[in-house]
Amino acid sequence: MEAYRQYRRIEHSVQQQIRHTASPTPSELESNATLSNDDKSGNNSDDNKDDKKQIIVDFNEKDIANDPTQWTTRRKLWTTLQIWLLVFVAGWASASTSTSHKVAAKALHVSKVAESLGTAMYLFGVAFGAVLAGPMSETVGRLPTYLGAFFVYLIWLMASALAPNFGAQIVFRGLAGFFAASSMSIYGGSLADMFPEKGSRASVWPWFALSPLLGPVISPVPSGWVTQYLGWRWVEWLNLIISGAVFVMALLFLPETSSNVILKVKAKLLVKNTGDKRYVAKGDEDGDSIGAMLGDHLQRMAYFIFRELTTLLFGLYLTLLYVLVYGFLQGFDFLFTDTYRFNTGQNYSAFAAIAIGILLGLPYVLAVNKIVKSRNNGEQGQEEQRLIPALIPSVLLTISMFWIGWTDRADISDWSVLGACILFGFAVMALFTTTYHYLIDAYGTAASSALCAATFMRYLASGGMVIATEPLYKAIHVEWTMTLLGCVAGLLTPVPWIFWWFGSKLREKSKYAVGGGDDSKDEKDDSKDEKDDN
Image 1 (spheres, one colour):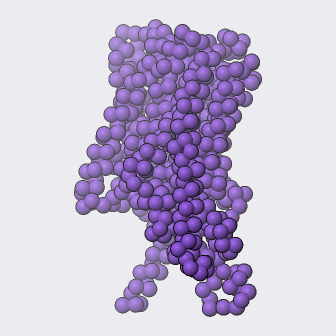
Image 2 (cartoon, rainbow, N blue to C red):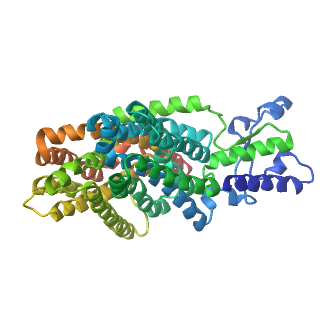
Image 3 (cartoon, rainbow, N blue to C red):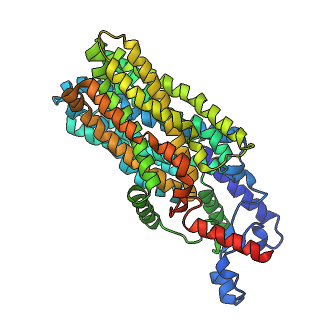
């Protein structure tokens, strides 16, 4: 296990320091340890020396290999690939069962709309699980959160495959989604652990963004054929097989990426080997409990959802993208089965068109980002420039909705609708990637709460859309359903344009954004100090 080898490396670096210290005082053992600011007041009483001073543990030149930001590029990419797969298979399982609603409903003696609760409950579980996953990963570490929750997720996948009745099935699916949330919500933190610089993160993120998008888009393709020839339970068994394979890989090779957690381990080893209890990991001086962190996290989430215009509007945009993707899980029955008489396998194979569009969106985003960077003399530029790749796709998304709705007719080739689906996938990729990237850079250390708020909104709404899709299509038919969704997309089209033009001014008024609130005040104070010094 990579985690055990990682622990041994930290232990070895601590013991090496001790062996090379003739007189093992704390200051000698930890060359990069410093006293906390509270204890630099000049009070040198013995009580302070023994009880009140904290020795802050940080990485030094002897254990720089333990610092995730200093890992080799190869190790960073290998770790990123493993996290990519964890996110991919969790997203895969979120959508795969939609292909078997009709068959499962018949076997469990419920309506197809009721059976759609299986998919919806998974998405609801992800929404609520994401709220807890963030604080857990910051307290106990990314690795225990990934592996511990993923193992329980596998158990509920198996239970879903064996579910004896409808009630058991939807409960098991909800619990599977709840524990899958760890993979589907904290990956942004893992990337920030390894790629703290905006430039390196900008190069990695578009590739990583394929994972949360392709998972729910690709899974219906094989799952549709599995449903047609093997039955609905084998869809769940397939989820378990591929998820289990990825879990075994992560169990063997995935390391901890949180610097704070690694430093906590180092501090505990220093305490164990020296008997001095003053060692405290950098960033853990206050020793906040998971309860305190969760309370603060929920408070900030509520602020971002209800009071922060940026996260509210972009949260709605991300929600729309996911509502459209998950809405198509039921909508394709009306688009292709009812209109073009596709069988189950053919119907869900049409999702490959969306996947093609997503893959085409990747080089577009990379190319635009490269052009923007070159015009900024190799720099990333202002945060709002992350939104440039989203400007044209924001219009294309609306066009794709109307295109699908008004050409889905038996007298028009199905290739027209498939072409519109490719355009839809292209727009979704560009919008999701740039919106997410903007929120990460615009909110800095508060980005985890901002993204968690957006994650909660989009999965909660997506779960509702899965249930509402069939009644909606039956009530107003394909053309008007897509027209309605196209109008909603049209209303949100100006969002990236507005923030591209005025985002910096809005950030200045924000409590948490980079360059806003207290940050702006600090920058002004620093500028004043520099002028005074001159």
